[in-house]
Image: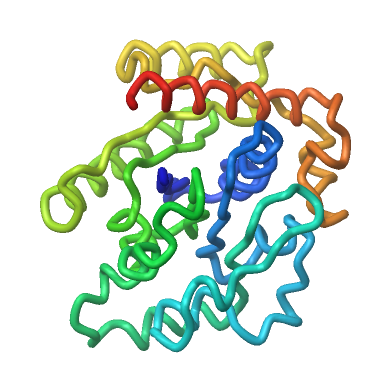
Length: 256
């Protein structure tokens, strides 16, 4: 079971879009996938076709120890993967966990209960370095960083890499950067090409070959509560996430 934290402290880089569409794409190749929504906005939950307002129990109840993952997990009928949903309740976890012993390992301990039940667990992190994100980084085997190829992205990336180093030192010694995913990529933009080249020269093979283009279908799909793969499989956005899923599966085979 591979646990992958999908995170970037910068908002609006396509984290949730990546989580939902990668979950659907991996599932389409036969993988058993659990998507864990760790953002109080609950966008990954609604983007997977689940009504977060109707949820009596969410990831919040797992983190505070009231429920197990199995008791809270929902099956999505629009993508063939499972979802551990979130809603506004999750914002309260930060306050409630702050004085708890082992507060950074709550998610890791909860995920141990489902070991072997999934091939991939994708953690959709909030766009902030808070206790929930630290829980994700402590539980994960590796980190995927979605990012736009723009000037400020490089600055935010160095902050995130430093955070990962700190978590590795204090909480999760085996945490690795799985890969950097270039999102909303516009090949006609010279700056995007320059930033992309800088990423490849600095991170090498850590940069996924797959690039996710700007695509209207990717933007439209969440409003229908489904991944782009279900909404419009032929779209460039959906096809790029299928390519990314293939790349991840191939990498996994090499490392096994």
